[in-house]
Amino acid sequence: MQTVIQLGRVARERRTVSLKTPIMSLVVISDAQRTADIESLESYVQEELNVRNLILATDGAHYGLVLEAKVDWPSLGKKLKKNLPIVRKALPSLTQDQLQGFQRDQKMAIGGIELEVLNKERNQRDQTDGQQWEPAFSDNVVVLLDAAPHPELLGDGMARELLSRVQRLRKKASLSPTDDARMQYVVLSNPDDINVESLVSSREELFKASLRGDLQMAENDFKGSNQSHLADEECSVANLTLRLRLFKA
Image 1 (cartoon, one colour):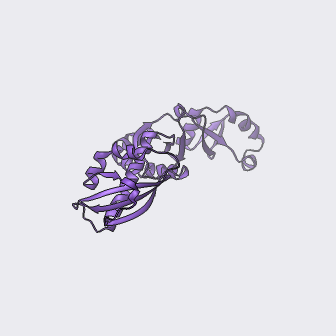
Image 2 (cartoon, helix red, strand yellow):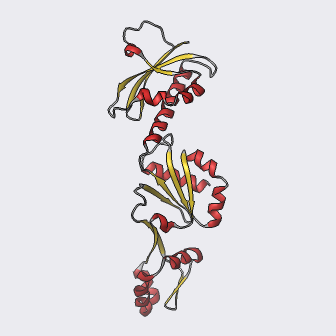
Image 3 (cartoon, helix red, strand yellow):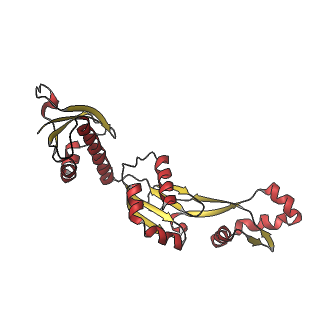
């Protein structure tokens, strides 16, 4: 489980996807025993990596993953000498089953010649189903992070990021979790033309449950308002720039 979580974080970092942004799918490829172990801890992996679907697989080829054998020819030549051409000729024809067997057993016979050390690499071929997979590897586990954009998940991520900002502002105003307050926002910059009002209203229950009230768009952008407020802060959520303000309930 710890290996999967670590690899998942590495894949997120490569795509600069924050842990606060939900991911649709994470594929974990390993042997049957390891995938069974991970399945028993599935909910923990999903929570730690903020991923909606965890897919467990034992066949990496389905996801375009292959093993390649690469050899340090100068070193092997000194060892094999006249037998080197036998290995050189046979290497390109090795099957995935043979390479997987070597990975498992750490030895292989090619043309009657025993080999104990090969450098192994996994490469990703064409992506499957149009999805954008970001891979990360360990010796026995491969994870594929679905980095394709999913608008519904991006909205969830933005809503949770906004929720975090409001909770931070409540803390700044020394409000306890049970204190009521009116929470309003103004959009200062919106280069992607996101419908912020719809994003917030469609997740009304999330904000009510976490903040004990509604988060509403302010009228007149706070201009001309003489009402005293408890706290005020400008913040960024994705490409949005907002001003948040808390008032007494």
